[in-house]
Length: 311
Image (tube, rainbow, N blue to C red; front, side):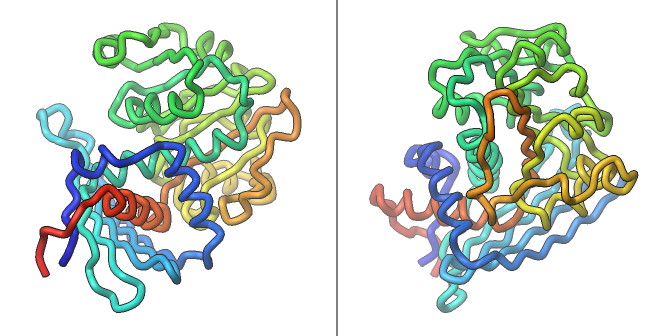
């Protein structure tokens, strides 16, 4: 029987720190075979991502991203995730797309932050008050429970709505000052122009970049990249696909040698001294969806979940 795991049913059994441990362990397995298809029409995107990891199985995630839907009161992102057995190819689970995406996206960044950010980080700035920003608040709060959170958003209304849901946070109106005051900056926008400037960065910071996913998208400028030690979750899914790195590499600002490591070399995810600036590009990837989906299914089963779907 195929497990059908809804958002509410799956989320009640999950833990942010356990997920990051599962992601780290997943990168000790044989390297994933990943195939991505990106189709574009104007601002709209179709992402079809597949991954196969020996011993872990297969996953196929299909996502549609239509940014203009928000103005019409519709969901901007839709899709589905299918998890298959690596032994016989059977469909083991159909997981709620938003459940997998939420935990994969924020967990991906949290794994890097647990290894690269200063353990005494107390001021965390969330740039972007959308759905991902709320997930980051929960994820980073699990690893940095004593931290004070600040949010900056392009619109005051968005920031106010975020604060209404999370009254413990502060709202920043001056982005440059907020970046300079933060120990960790986690950025989840859909910008095609840099919103974070290298001149704002301070020694000892950790910068987490999530929002850019297209070849024309960036969240930091060249100066920020040149001031930081750069890490990525996957070289294959970031360098050639996402403008954050693709653009400055094509222009000769940096080269691939500037990227210290990805998660398949996770032992190198180490802060060398308290004053250096570390920068992580979260590019996602189907292998991370597979690892996250497998973690969700295992946690669901451990809590007594049983398959109720189709045979």
